[in-house]
Length: 257
Image (cartoon, rainbow, N blue to C red):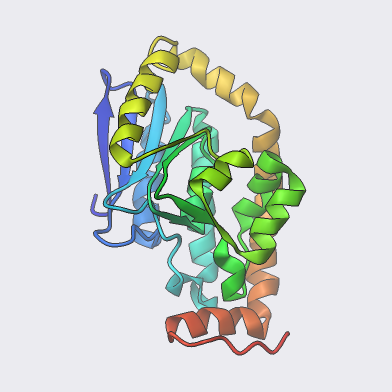
């Protein structure tokens, strides 16, 4: 594996997945296929009690590859991206995102699908897709479920990026820590206290039950949003202008169609 690393801790009961492309930990087709392959391999692992996700370096992830959002690549990109979510949902293994630095777009959506999110004070989170003339399918389902329409509309429609403290205040993040070292130390204690003493089998059933409504909405609506993105949004001039202007490092010129 080239763009992700995995470590097994606590007698192989915790899988620590590290996104690492050497730069901004972009969720491109290579990283996504590696993640899907690894996650799928956990299906028959009866010992896993927790899967954690974090980014190497100073940032969690700047998000999905903008280049792969281009019209001719969008369908393949979204199908791979969404397969990652279906795979996580299907496992019913508790998941945790550990965030430092930038955690945006598809990177934030990967965090949002997790059961628990912990962050340090450097973390910045948001769904800035609208700034590129597109929208975020998984977040459009997950955010309203987690924090209600008032707050999710603000993030999804404006594309604003918020601090870890603000995200905790609206119920998106479980805990915020002063720095990365303090966060990791606290997470070690949290895992020992809340996860390790429990049955891996029972944790799966508890996660399946706790997430029943969440999983239903994801599995029902994500295919619709995929179709909306690929077959409607990407047929508009502005969606293509937004992606192309980003790639060309210029300000978009919207035609409102």
